[in-house]
Length: 166
Image (cartoon, rainbow, N blue to C red):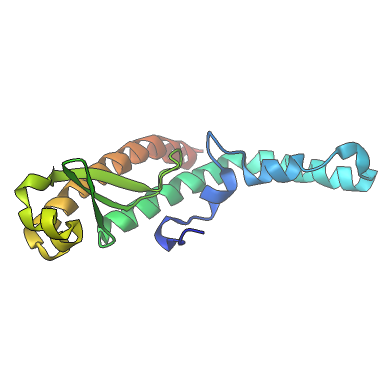
C-alpha cells in the first residue's frame, strides 16, 4: 500500500468522486437490491437520496474549494520534491491534488542531465544539494501549479459569486 500524503487528502473530494468515479453517496444509495428491503428501509433510502440531491451542489462546491485549498497549501509550502531521470531529462515532481487525474502529483522537466555531470555519475538525488537547481525546479513546479490553480479559481469564482447573490 502506498503512503498517505495528508496534503492531498480532502473530505468532500473523496465523497463526491469525479467524472471517472461514482460518488460515495451514490454508491451507498445504489448498494443492494431495493426489492429485498423492507418498506421502512426503502423509505429511509428515499429520504436519504432526496437530501443528497437537495445538497449535491453544495457538496460539489465544497469539493472544488477543497481541491483549490489543497493545491494552494502545497504551492505555498513547496518542500516535498523528488527528482527522477527519464531518458536525458531530469524531472521534478511534487504531490498535487487534481480531481480528474489519477496521478496525484505534478511533474515538470527541469533540465537535461548533460548539464549536471555529478548527477549523471552519482544519481539525481545529489541535485538536492544544488541550490540553483532546486530553485529552478521549484520555479517550474510553481508555474505548473499556478496554472492549475488559476484554472480552478476561474471555474469556482463565478459559482461563488452566484451563490452570494441569492
